[in-house]
Length: 336
Ligand code: AMP
Ligand code: TRP
Image 1 (cartoon, helix red, strand yellow):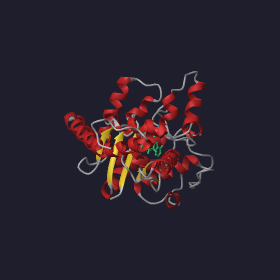
Image 2: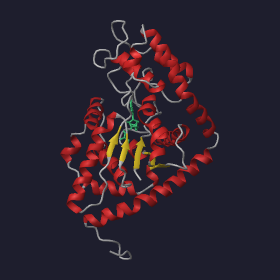
Image 3: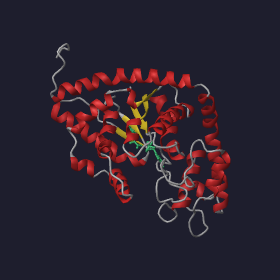
């Protein structure tokens, strides 16, 4: 059976981009067709300036939102990355396979480190090595597929390269995974700046729809979205990025394609109004379920406990095999 792994970082509140680009696909499609693991990858949240209490709160919230989005813990394994030691164990081995140059070429590293330096801050070493930890997340489970948004393409490519290189040098150990993307909304853009990604950690929230935003807040943000010059509703990502983003969000919520929908609207105002309502309706059941789950924290904790136990059982043999293959001596009481 196909195995799927994906993860989400608790660096901020989950956004509509996370949902349409990744989580909805995990809940509606992936968990039904494959053996799936979905992880709150909290170790990745420590690569940038962080507040410990906030990371804890956001980790719990992200796990709750995965369940509220319809991920069924009877079908999929839902767990917190730091509860399973194998990720960090394997990451070190992969650091011995990856190169310094390869890491420095990662687009996300270049962007985030430049931003950090421009702010006068320092760049954590873990920001550079983070894609290796991500590769370890995936390879530890022998995942075949990694459903992600568009921004993770390069990291999954790196994961493939590391798997192939390790296998060539030390004997066949890892499955070489491939990335999968949603048909529309693989990259939801910021409503106030439609040339950049709608990201969790945007400084101002005006261009970002959060999964837990109240309906009126969602409406306000979408109605105030930046649109483009002219007045014709056309799907043109280059020429009309604001309108194209709204069309993609609308299509992802309602079904259909952004091209077809563009023919239906005469004005930006009408498109915004319908997009806002479509988003409110998509978020409604998730928010309702979230409310129920928040009232029952013991349930969420039990899901995470069982998830970590299952994940440990799945990853341990693979990581042990990699330790042996790369030349590490087994502990004395273990057989060769
Ligand atoms: P992150 O928030 O960076 O941990 O991302 C979790 C998942 O959501 C990854 O698969 C991302 O590719 C996806 N994702 C994040 N932001 C967006 C966005 N604006 N549009 C589409 N997918 C996104
Ligand atoms: N790097 C991913 C992101 O920023 C999160 C992530 C960490 C991930 N480990 C993963 C995604 C493994 C897929 C598989 O969105």
